[in-house]
Length: 167
Image 1 (cartoon, rainbow, N blue to C red):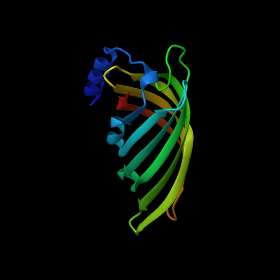
Image 2: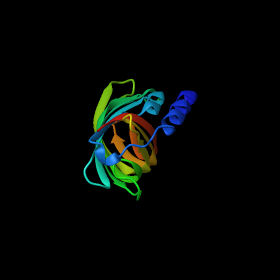
Image 3: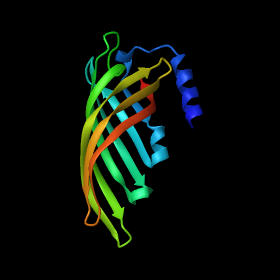
Image 4: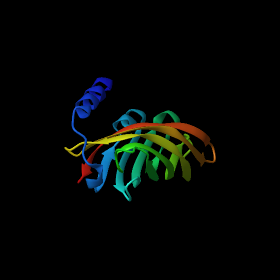
């Protein structure tokens, strides 16, 4: 898996950069999440020269703690690069999420709604071909309180999303 991601990244870096102001929106997925039981699909839309809004749908299946569920997330990105416009370049973003999570503790299944938030930063490339590569990292906080299992705490945000930019 690491070799495939490295090959894709090297191939993408060899392409010419597109004019980001021509991008109407980007649909992308995070292939790294599959390895840990997390699927995410996101749509990002530029709203100004240096800002964009993204909304995503998530599916969780963390077998090690018997937690699964669905969620929605959003973020508002601030792009800082002087020579590019949204949605390309260096960015920072506050993130929020709302999830319906189920926990199976062996004595029945419990379901709760969970709210989370955090911050992330990274860099996004968009090429003439429409291919987009988004690398990001950050830190989030989530609380999920079941009758027999509670989780409240922070977690790292780390990802690589690959997608297609509509121009």
